[in-house]
Image (cartoon, rainbow, N blue to C red):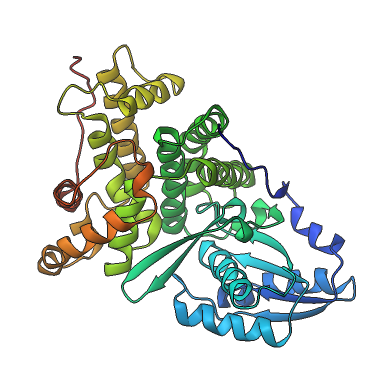
Length: 386
């Protein structure tokens, strides 16, 4: 028996931020970061909330990859002036921090009523506004928290909030969206419901991400990618993910590579490994990847050709956005990388995303995938057929 979770309520499209003006609350905790303050978006959100007479406290100290200390600080702030509404305005790190604070404070003080939770993403990547996942750093390791109580009640998708995202971050976050869809599609927990979302996301990413990268103020393209990010989040919060994310969590935590970029560096290698590309190329995942290639209108007369087409499409998309080909091109020291391989593989095996990967890995396989991603991998643009 399966289950598909339909939450939160999603408000989308240009001008959707005005939804904040419709929310009634007595005390609000607005979780954001310095960039949102600098660009005036935090003040704009606070003003919309205050129009209903709410007392709005702004917590703007969230940095990229929130850690346990950040969560502890947020718990103190929230406990001191307990809100009836929490609004997270920012990228995935901001939303994850707000989730983790709500989660940990609820566990520490179960007698407190959970506040309403609204997520307003300003990047099109994590899909955190509709997921039960939160990623928090503990030292060099990233911990993946999963709990339905972290799901926002309302998600607000306003493409104008992402219009100023620089090209490099647009590429990183966009590839994160693609990775979410690909991994949800071949997950052991995939369903008809998650498949429908993942297929549409893959189509949207290949159609609109290059336009977002080239012209950030293209609001049509931004809206499509904002929607794709949210839909991918819906897919993977129900189907979970796979070892691209497990490997990326360990790599990013160890060498401070942005999460979406880490996924982009590892994605093609994992697709090939899941498909048994150099072997029979007839796994469950291989057939699913070939189906995606067919839906994208790519050559897919055989499973092998379809997988090749998808691998080439991923490689071409990365190259079009001038992303690094391999981990060695992302500023990581080779000796340090080799030294940490065992630790990273062990972390990836423990990661919560690993059990739903379609092919079960061991440490040796994960180390081999890391080494392949170190070099970078290019694929021929013609399938040989099998």
